[in-house]
Image (cartoon, rainbow, N blue to C red; front, side, top):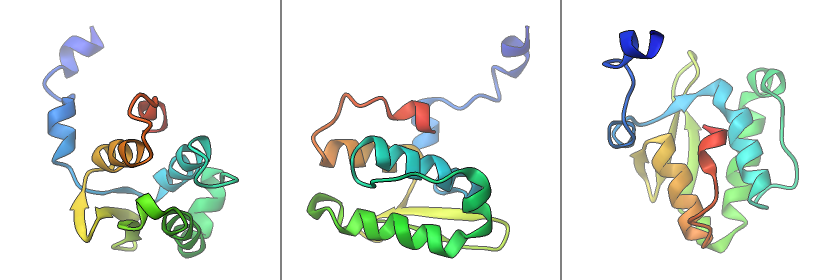
Length: 117
């Protein structure tokens, strides 16, 4: 019943592609995603990410820049409320597109990125 009530509120994959950014709390999942792909050699829990925002973003971006295929990828915090901007080559993209593009750049198109979103 809940799905039926909310059916008009759930975004499709195509709609999600057009929603740029994410939240500060999602940085923990970002670290877990990058760890699972072998881009980062550790991951961080949500509480740590919330309290060490700048440091965690630096770690994520440093890890992305350490892989030749991911040099154009970055995550930045845009306001104190915790919104992040995910970008590829300076262009803001949705978090879903960011994840899919990382998988594609690493030649891991079949990687199950959705469990980290």
